[in-house]
Length: 404
Image (cartoon, rainbow, N blue to C red; front, top):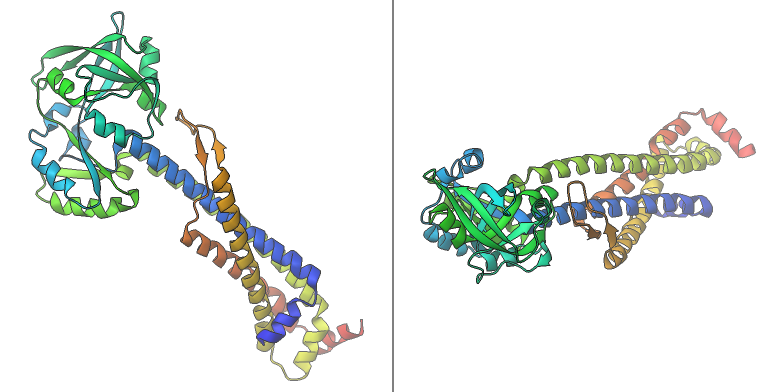
């Protein structure tokens, strides 16, 4: 039956070519669209990881719920032992200490409310690969009283590198303290909101300002983002005492989860549209072929073939068309994806972002397999309804088509 079906589909070469083209471009379109959306997720995730949150963070229990209002109540007084234990995990690249607090930044004329991160400059420079320095330089370990400010903060206060500023903050005991700092750099991250409120200064300077040696989070940088879930499970086991808790970068970035949910819905609708287009195109081609071959099917039924045999023959022909077209679609889609990724697609900054990026096509095996399955199944199923209609015709009416 397979040999007969193979010969049948190439009897009408033009119609077969049109059908194969529809399947090929449909499958290729699914692969390219899926790869483009995957790249959006990847680029957004890496931007958030390497400009703000790191891969995972460890804090005192309750910090993520109440720490934004009272960060001084959730300081980790002696993080060294925990830091060393986490750093021994094989997937971990680096563990960084960070203390965050709110305060006022003064340029001698006006105040601007900010959120400050006391950081280990050299380690954060390695982690923050998505942070661009638009003026000056990166904060370094030698900058005892240096400060890097977000582009929005610099614009609000009219700051430039070399300016002196005063940072005011409350200590954990409730006293007001101030520190004079030198602006060494102005940075631009992925997020406009982040750049409008955040500043960075050395951890030692931040602790001097707060009159405390504590930190409120350990930021973990991994060797690969794909290992995040594995390390998260290990941390849950390591921190089971309940004194500390950990969050992954996905949990820390609500914007990412909402963006993924939005694009997944849009891509699902796109898949549905392409499926319908392939289904209608193939169904039209198959219906025309079946109509022209009604006399042939009448002869098969008249010579003892069962209706199920005719349906099976049609499904075999459609399955072969689907297999060939889907394989061609996979080959075309993968090739186009590689070529597009080599050149790149310049993209404007996304909403609430400052920086554009160069998009590529992420070729993921599961997306390729899903696209192949959609093309194959849509083509195979397209023949069922026309086939049922033709086998329900009275045999004498079907045989009359041989005389036309």
